[in-house]
Length: 226
Length: 307
View (tube, rainbow over the protein chains, first blue to last red):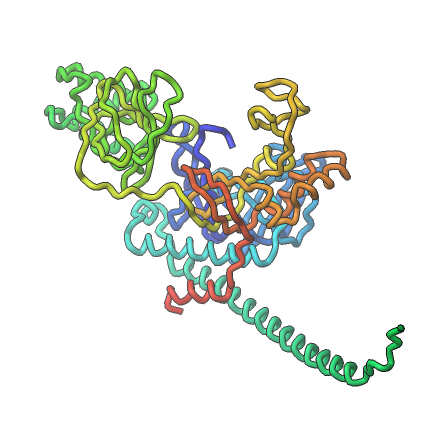
């Protein structure tokens, strides 16, 4: 981090919301950062994402520019890693899809003619785990629902004007993600219960075995010596 | 420039000058001229207009009224007035500074500096004051309020509830960055700075201490904390204490392996940190991986949505 600059908070957003972004805000003063404005009114410059790295592919051979795709429960983020992100590039070498990764990235909008393509430029990538991914989904769901409520309460007039977002569509994407997670957790929980029962059963057996052993053992069998 | 941004600037200036009979129109036309025709930077345009109006209306620099704002709203280069409580006074680092410390209101805290030349009555810790016509600047990302000779300070009897910005806190966030000056480091025995190849920038060739430390950024999606983890904290998370770190470094003939290992194990993880907060710096006294019961968390969020 460059000293003297305020560090941008890493925002949590699902790919579905991010990929609908069309507008930038900020960047007016010399020092002001540029933000991607999402259809739910999130102004984001940096993102924190935990998802599944699905693809990594060098754009051209030996270009050291890699295209990646990272999935969350609502879709996927498109990203590019080049030599200008040395740490991310180095980490990417050791990662093989599919793999759960944690990423901090800059949010960008690429303009191609009249098309706008939202993408991420990762600063750091690291392999992650299911538990972290699950909590990221919960955290991101909470943040997204909060944004939806703010729009419903009429707090984001400019966003409604620009995007007129279909709130129900975004809301149901979040709910679906949570329901899926709940289902998985229920299965996991059942698995854990089964393991516990199984273990208990084994322990009971072990206990029995021990007692029987003790009965068989007769101290007089041992030669204690003089 | 966006229309609303333009209007914000107009309003800001208008609020300061309306008591002198300045009209909004007057400000708008000057601002348009400077910003859109001459493409002058925003701050310069603002300053020029304020100075121009002062001259035209014959207002002495010290007489200009400044809006009363909350500490959370202050921005660099603004002239403002604010009410706050002196939380702490620090030892001034230079004779040009009469007093320095921390002032707070219900929205936040900020540093302040009273210049010696300003000749102000001494402030006391725990008392509340009205600071008028002070200027805000920013140094190393920290906003600070400057009290100069044109400023006025009055003690007020109002009780101000200060938003707690320091003290023991507990936060959950993701570790979104790990700085390069982390890992197994050598520090100067005299000043504690990190030493490279046995040479301290201040003291030259010195004896060194070996420390295991992590500097990083904890981010909860709403704000960031500059996090420091000591050896004990690092060891409780990763099992790597200073002994293990040394061993790693020896095996690989390279200290930087320790930082790489820490990054691999900790970057992007959710941590629950207890520690002392000072401004943005969080010095961890204890830390653990944050592992909530996901099912309960999910059900809670769904419940709030009526599902």
